[in-house]
Length: 343
Image (cartoon, rainbow, N blue to C red):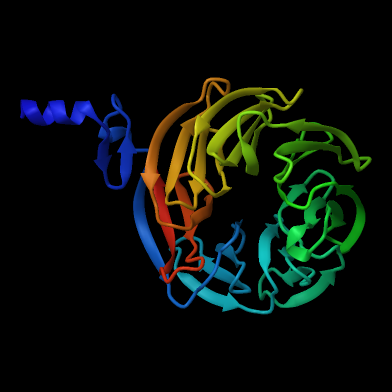
């Protein structure tokens, strides 16, 4: 028994897909795999999830399959596939609204769907290449990233949309051909946009749709997902070169901390109540961080997932994390991984 304890103390402990650094006991596992939902017949990448609590549904944009996937929110069983898209990326479900918005890439145009039947009710003519979005419920405005290299454009844009009228009401061009995630502050007027090819964050006044600043990253490059702790005035940036989570002061752009993370991250859900950050990496694991002291984050654990498992979201109540494992160009089976979040 003594030799086994010494062996465990000498290196990392592996249990149920969790790799724990020395000094962290197995009971501290931040995630526990609860369910795997196979999705045979899918190829390419999935993109982002959205939750419709009013109708008890979980929605997933199947980017390369060109479909909207619908799951039961309680059981997480797959209910139906809805075709008719070009390359769906992001989905907006608004409380009380009878429609949902799907940012459809390439030349697909952003679509407005009936929230119950998913019947197409209209399109919003925007610059091609709609991808990430952020929603301001106070002003009822959606900010959608468009353009870029995927549609052979040298620039991108952030376009402002009224989801009720399904009309573009403003926008700003960014000098970037690869713009990824966007987030906004609810107690102010700023948008923060990851300019991935510049390895910088552009700050936009969304009331005037003018550029305020551009903050370059120094600790890593290729920033893609973004999360925001507004009360702490800290942005969390998931970078791909190398895989790293960078903490940035949202007042002045100063980088205050950084920790290694998985490669090719495409989502980074943030549980504000628990101060937990989940960096989802396509290379096959999740880095879980405690950011209760955001300038001194700690790695809680590394949880094995699957190759291509790079997008996901926390479900209401923050007790479950769903992750989409994309088969990409491989012959791997597409699947949804469901994790119970441990205290």
